[in-house]
Length: 261
Image (cartoon, rainbow, N blue to C red; front, side, top):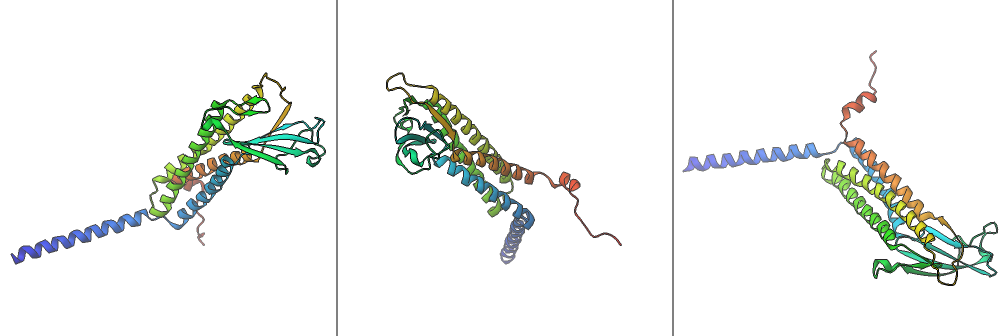
């Protein structure tokens, strides 16, 4: 009985030692080298810049400005700026408008503003802007595509954080794909929104009063969206390069060593 207990204890000790060696080996293999970790952190910083621009673009309403012309015999003029979620109507003093500008604006000028959210997200109603009607299906499509792009961007950030914290390098490729898809979806959202603006300008109401002549210009929110798309695509390319085996790149970029004397 004594010998059987001794052998059982010895077997348990060996199993614990083997399990400890396997855990130590796994931790050693999953640990990132300082050089590789630095490259991943730089890519994460680049993707954070893209994420900031994307959130700023989707969350603001300065995608496009619709401006009436100043020559209307009044001391004030009207302008509208809108985004994916809401629009703001502004009444500006013509004296504040730059002298060389034929239309009302820009929208950043101080004036009486009235902002409302689009109702096609809740009741399904189209919005009416300067006797023109939006095409809600196109506006909804642009907003939904942008939200899906933001969700993929958040998933990509989570994957890269898991790579840095847990050493799960297989998630590096997943994060790169998420960032790439996010950048592409933001570009698609911008294009769909451009079509929604064209549809709005063409859908003129036949009822009086007559629709005023309008000029439109894309604003800084759309520029942020374009920049976010390009930065996210660049971050995706950087992460994909980090997933490639080092062999082919090592022959193109040989390490500099000490020359023989």
